[in-house]
Image (cartoon, rainbow, N blue to C red; front, side, top):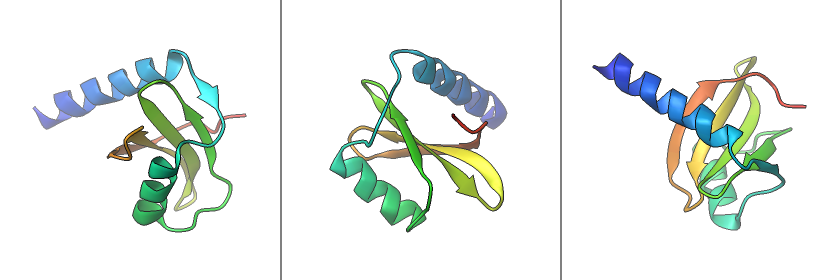
Length: 84
């Protein structure tokens, strides 16, 4: 059941990322939440849509994306392809 829930969450995240995506820094609430969760991370690239902000960065030599609600709520971190 956990695997199914994670698969559904991942699918929803991908669908959300594809819809109305823009780049640039998120709001201050999200950047504060990101720093509290991950500390000072270099070379973070941000994308966001109406509901979520996505931080693309390297963690443990792997490209990942951390997902935050635009209210600062941490959602998930998943492996990701780097964005250009």
